Image (tube, rainbow, N blue to C red; front, side, top):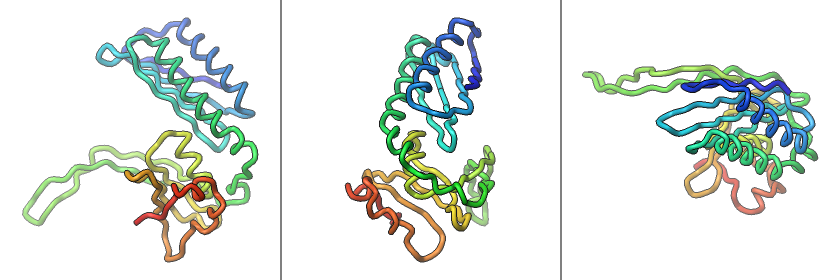
Length: 205
């Protein structure tokens, strides 16, 4: 496993590097068969020590973030969060056959953050920040798992059979929303999914 560690607003030390690599290595060896790389950012902001750890495990990404008054504690808690996520999903990841095996490739998607300013003809958007990323092919079930692993509120992905861009997101009521092109529901295949049986998965309204 390749571990890339970035230090921001603080001195880089071998002790911190070794601590991250040792603790992270134990978790990876215990729960994952394949991890391509890990990206770790350690930073000091307003007297708080931030640890942001991202694992790229095959098709899935796992993330743990924490901040405290001690960097070692932040690292430990962030990695503990990753371990809990991996433990929760270990059996699903082991038994689930990815839908992207025979799918089309990822689709490049542009992401922009903008503000608006009022002019004579109405509101005009002004781009503050922009970026690009690859929306990877996966089933809705995989997207749910990926979003949970990343602890994100939404995920952009493509449908394996068509390369159509979809967005899955968490609703404030605790359910999930799905934005997809076309007039037919893509959730019919999730009838037997545990989240669906528990009433947590729902189409966007």
